[in-house]
Image 1 (cartoon, one colour):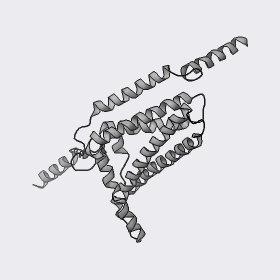
Image 2 (cartoon, rainbow, N blue to C red):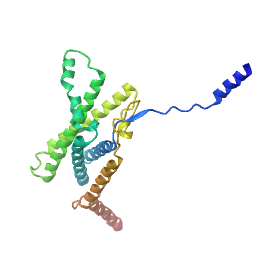
Image 3 (cartoon, rainbow, N blue to C red):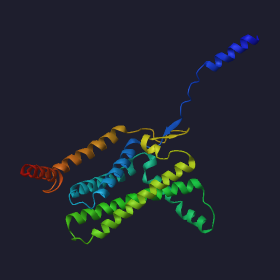
Image 4 (cartoon, rainbow, N blue to C red):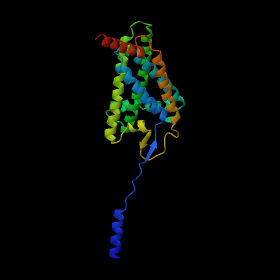
Length: 248
């Protein structure tokens, strides 16, 4: 019996243990994630090209794209999944008066409530600032009021940058505090842990359609670039450099 038990113990030790599958649930749909990253990329490009006359058409194109994405988000907030509805955002914001009252009474609000409220305020601030920044940029580009809105547009852009950086900082702080990557759901659409899927349908086709629409708009805009901007300007610069080389 002793030899048999020893053989069974050795066999059990040599048997590979099957990896436990990670449990996760879908919490963010594909179109919402596509909107998030397209908006982030457009803002980064628009901010980087804001001071360059050579890249003015790129700046304008990205601003138009942000306005279009914002319009889509407004509609998606009315007809999309429950977690992206405006009602879900407003329900989180309703906790603001009670949160302020607790802070005023030197009480520590629940961490989960603070997290949800902070994220909701950041999202609302970003959407409002995107609307104001793109609207002021359009008026400025059309020269309806001359350069009267130039400082306003720049201030709104800087304010949007600060809110975005604050949003990123909040995500990083929560990830470090909870030891869980809070940016991961916006990449994969899934959150680690048990529970039912908050999003029943991923709507991947709609996310792909959004990307195709944005890329198509960029291509069309590139062909409509004014003289001195866009591909025509780049071609002119290359031709000028080529003639300089010939003169040498």
